[in-house]
Length: 189
Image (cartoon, rainbow, N blue to C red; front, top):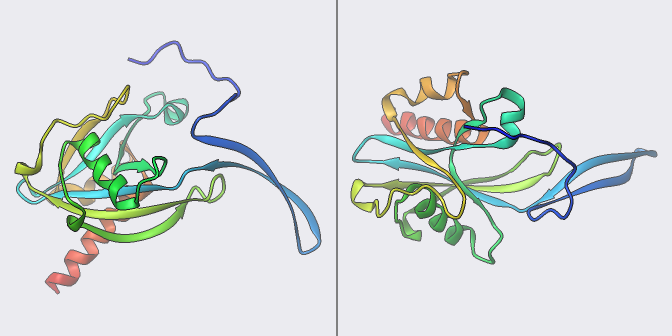
């Protein structure tokens, strides 16, 4: 239940910094509003025993302002804000958010790319990890006040899932699933 919603200007931000950039392009003076944010990692998690993907479902206030629901399906992810490597951050986030414990040798780097390029231009590194039921050491759910639900989506219906417009999914999730399906197609060709 979401109530008591109010929106105000940001003062003393913890994780982002609103900025205005001034520059010249082809002799024309311009400016652009942006938000400086931390880089991040995201992980596509596949449970081999269940033949399903483990996504996280959580409330996002910015989405709530757009659709009055605010719940999104996302990859397990976290920002690089603790002086840890991308791999260490990914491993920590997997356990915190989904309850699966993995080692760095089970992470496969898919790619790094820039997201939200019109607003922040932050860099995200995407990993893939296979897990088994025995790797689940807790129910996950996040830390502190995070309220994350682990959503297992069967491999057999994941293509339908990513195109279901009634559910809010991130572009990174769709990209990662497309990568997985293409990789699987090439293996079976």
